[in-house]
Amino acid sequence: MNIFLMGGWLMWPLALVSVMAAAIIIERILFFLPCPFPPKDFAGRLEQAATGDAAPLLDELNKIALFRRFAALMASDHPNKEAALRIEGEAIVKKLEARLSLLSVLARLAPLLGLLGTVFGMISTFSEIANSQAGVNMNQLAGGIWQALITTAAGLCIAIPALFFLHLFQVRADNMAASLSEAANAVLSTDKEHAR
View 1 (cartoon, rainbow, N blue to C red):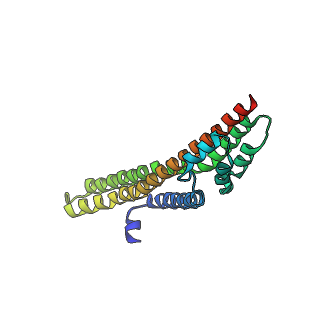
View 2: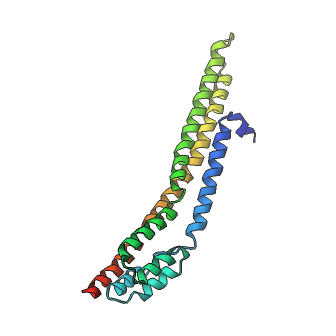
View 3: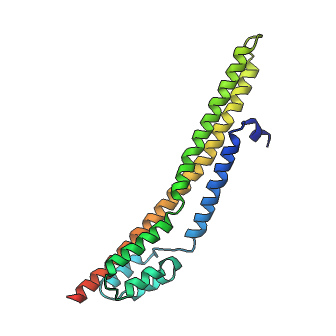
């Protein structure tokens, strides 16, 4: 707690940023854990769907609550199935990417707040040295710079894991969205062949 207080008042906004980032990371981990999609044999399921047997692919989609409505639309005789799948797919993508933009902002904000704290600390340190009648005290200078750098270190300690998890979540969301699109295209191409 002593180091936290020595970092100055900007440590409080940094603490808030860290709590928000941690909350988003935990929430996203809990969101993605029960969604093991696409499965390892997804390419085989796509091939089956493209040849007219979409049941194994639909079974995989139905295992995940988030995709059940999408799977139901794929299996339905909806008059405008392609548009309905696109709308449902966009809704799923929004859920997959929920709060990732906020996590991105927090990951960028943390080092900037840390740098701002360092700048304020350096200004304060050099102001004290300039007003000192006894000349430059190296211990005072070193101590002031050490305190000023605490916020930068704190900002980087928040930003690095936040950026790492942001990348993981974004890749996961993109992979799932692309797989859903492939699944829909496989079923739609089969429907078009049957309609001929």
